[in-house]
Length: 639
Ligand code: ADP
Image 1: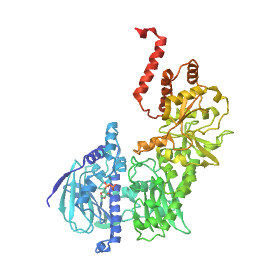
Image 2: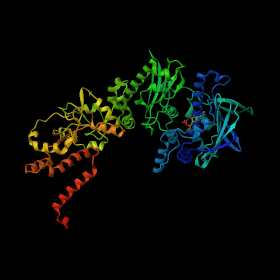
Image 3: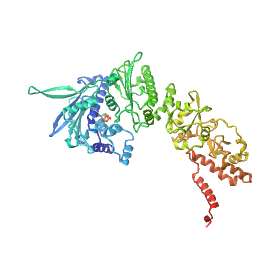
Image 4: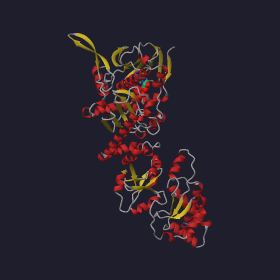
């Protein structure tokens, strides 16, 4: 096969340009990325040999080697591993394309905003560490041979949109990435990445915990003679096995960045060592920012499983419930068998115990953060609150046991405060006489804040929880009580106790009959409202049946659901209703007053952010009324 010339995917090219041209980037990280890839490749080699031992015959011990040299008159730097390697197709799909879903849209948005992004941010968002090599090299060669295959391949690119692949020779499986280094611009503060101490420093800083040895050949003058020796540049200590007091914040942060591909420091970490019974160690991180695809993309990094310090897998889903999927880091078990397979994991009782214990620890840590560092907790909640709340609706019942603990750490918007508050704070602030925790769900906060359903609570001095996340709609009906106080949706007719005032008699049966006659089948019933003060009417759900917002939500997800018919409540004290009553008493009827009834009904829908059946008709009715009332005031309309 001859040399083949190929082109990077458009998005890849765009990313590459962004990265190469970003002046803010910390270039040192290219080495971290290449070593990280080499280490991943060695993990994969070990796993593959575990299932097909014959592949391991004759292989040398796993190691990563950094080498310095010159090629074509320029300095070069090589990072070589004897890991899994890549075949031709893998080279093309792993190096030439970006696998992340949503990358295209995200890049387009970035372009529109004209935002400059640091290389680290790009790597974090798109998982494209390899490309960072082009920040320091004007050509990158990859010589690679897949474990179990005889052919080797040479990839070469100047990072300009195209690359070549051709057959090559390599004596053993693995990958060598060779960077033809750009000449450092000293005036810009560029480093010489072929320099021994620069390399040492970077590896110590970013890759010390890599478990495989990172070797480099060092030459030293001894007695006037040059001596060559192989030196190991990393300590290889598993950071989660070291006592927390011996590890610096920087070391933790670097490990986090390596294992999560995030470029920000983590928000917080959780270190634990569990003994007695099942033994395991854990080092978990909560990121400071949610990745852009947290809500819709499959997880990539997650929490890795190690068994007795040996890497088993990334993103072990059985370790962590899905509502904690933002966690990163490692859990290292002492008891699980090394040859455990993904299939067995699901059923493994030991793993279930670990999961339960890890979940409890995380919940406790979050609760502690809520009490001890509210500002930090607020940041956490802004990023991941929506995901945590999914734990309240787990369908398989597995999370039932955590429901109360999750409720403890949930924050809610309310009608009484700017900031979000915890349920305990809500309950503690409940005035004398308030028996329930009132809440209202809907599509967005500003609509909720304007809802007429809040009026009676406002009058009574009761605060109301406002829930506008999509998950709330599904979760809230499952809330029964907190701290002995039952939850109550304001959408329900019986949300508030009856006032028992003279409202009923204040409006004549005639008004009710008029509304019922005009609205007919479009409402379930028309009643006198106990809850309104400033609005003429509102729509509420009957006691039985689902919530209106839930119906809307299901519909927006494309599901067919029967419409929930609701009850229209009218406010007998409101001047609009009184005026209708007056006109009725003067002998007018459905013919002249019907239009008003329709308008009152439709504006209830609008007020809660819902859609009205016939917007054009609504607009025409409003226009007619405007014309009538304006004409009354201004004779010029006649002309
Ligand atoms: P990431 O490591 O975040 O997936 P990269 O752009 O660094 O992104 O690498 C893309 C893919 O290329 C890797 O996922 C891996 O499959 C492959 N790859 C990179 N370096 C190596 C290597 N040294 N050995 C084998 N495969 C590699």
